[in-house]
Image 1 (cartoon, helix red, strand yellow):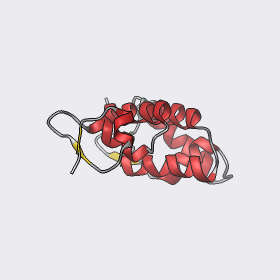
Image 2 (cartoon, one colour):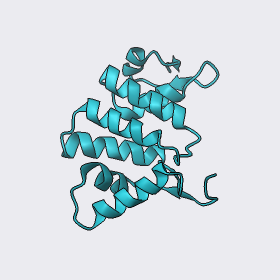
Image 3 (spheres, one colour):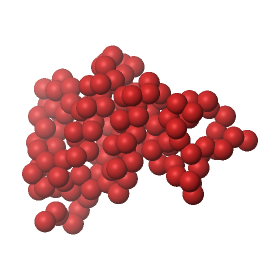
Image 4 (cartoon, one colour):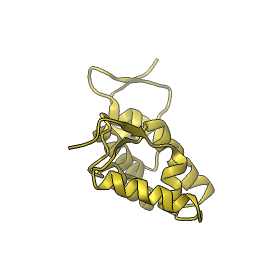
Length: 135
């Protein structure tokens, strides 16, 4: 059973955990994420933090898309991760890897449906086969 408190994970915790590049913060991030993995702590990775992780890893650290998608997908499947939008974020990361499209567009596409279409001028949504309507 998960604890009642749900922690919102900030980008810097994810980055220190994945990159293991800080003598003080990386071990703390690893301990926290291990507790989430063991279901000793409940946590959510907000979409906004996931987007920031993708951008920082891709643009600043030059991490390949495949590694970004794999590592963030694995993190989202930790037993203590309780995101209500987990399925959409996992689908978005798959689209991000397969399409070469911006992560924000991928999240929108993954969250869209016949009853919740995207309205956009962006032609990338055709690649994503999202439910879209143009203005």
